[in-house]
Length: 381
Image (cartoon, rainbow, N blue to C red; front, side, top):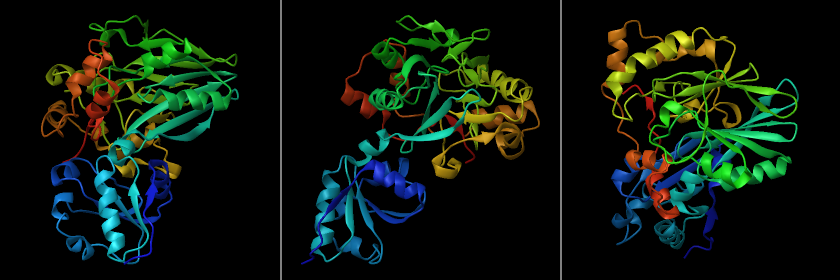
């Protein structure tokens, strides 16, 4: 009988291990379909999938695949199955056994705040990395005020961060109508008495009031006048709008990522929007300062995480390294972004309806709708 004690590892602790490239062996006991669809990746992790039901008659099938000299983390959907399997491993004499607290549901919702950099008049910009799902939100802070961009559903995290920084959230902005996750922008605006901004061309069917996010508007954060300048950049959606912040940063929404480009098909209009996407990437973005630092709304692969977990790249460098920005002909581009795309995000139609304010799912339903990876990018197959 082993003398070790089962321990919980929460999502924040797991994130730190991944970002610090600590060695960790993960035993994922979800069914194979769920595992193949979405798994924990990054750092120096090794992972094996042995479904829970294959271990009910005994833990022996797992023992041969689990090393003796590494920390072991057992993972399931909600934590219950992983606790049971972790206990079996300890009874079999294994040590350094943990289970993921809250399971993959908790992993999906964890946000890791990372400072991107300083702004010219004394402000700061922060990136919130939803490492389990690949979503990115941003907070711009200046002189006691803040603006949130592409706010995620976990609004309490942003509220607390603003309080800790001693700032008042004055604006929340969505670069487009999201289809892979539920926006928290409107709710956060209501909670903080802020102004909620949305591109009007994405708002034809919304059931709420908003401020039009469009070219010609200048959103000021703090007395130091850190400007957020909208740039119309359709292609992922018809209303997609990028933001230039402080003449330093390009918040590209789901148009441009570090290793890929946005997909045009999540509203069922891929053939209509392909030309818009190419124009945005190959003309609008090409005419911007190539020294702008691109800050996307998502990442698709853990290889896109840089130092400290930050997801960012210089625009000029992306025109060299990003395959989606180096397709010669219109026909090749059309084929690349409309054929052989990854599966569409989980419940994306219901998520779009929620973000329009047309349906109001419960908190539990929202969590279920968001399970799985984001799939807003065109990735090489």
